Length: 83
Image 1 (cartoon, helix red, strand yellow):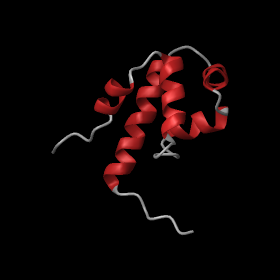
Image 2 (cartoon, helix red, strand yellow):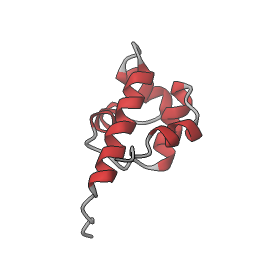
Image 3 (cartoon, rainbow, N blue to C red):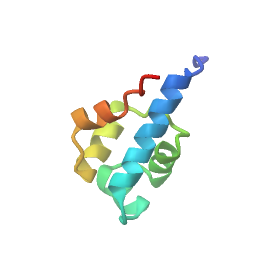
């Protein structure tokens, strides 16, 4: 299966999501947050660094719950800024 290349907007949205999650994590360790969310630390690392710009919905939902983020607010903060 060949994956369609991501658009610049999709990459930007993924980078913004990663930044928001990293900021919400604060001083908590990546391993701790990942374990609480039921994902690997490597998955969280890839999301936070933008290397996984389109993570699965349930992965994002689990991370948002652990970090105390609303999915609605998170989605709204990830919308590309109009130029």
